[in-house]
Image 1 (tube, helix red, strand yellow):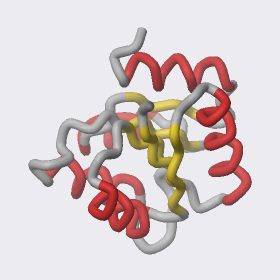
Image 2: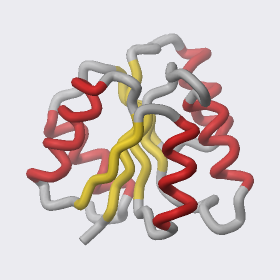
Image 3: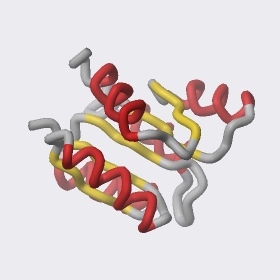
Length: 123
């Protein structure tokens, strides 16, 4: 079973994404910001995919992704950004720091699962 780390400062959004992923058969861990997400990643070590927002307190998504990509142990984990930021500059920055996919909220469950499956090589 794949383990996915869902990161969003909105509890409602985080729970929504987690419920979609759990219903699809994934194990889900949740964090409310990038700092907590890094703690979970380093503690768990075997995260298969990260689904993250960008605008968060303590450590934003861009900085968190950059830190993950700089770490030899975690640099290849697929990362999907799910955010309300829909400008091309935000998307470019997301890909520049290392995201694999960029989804603009609100996202429908089918698109989310499809992106996760592709990122995990299941499609």
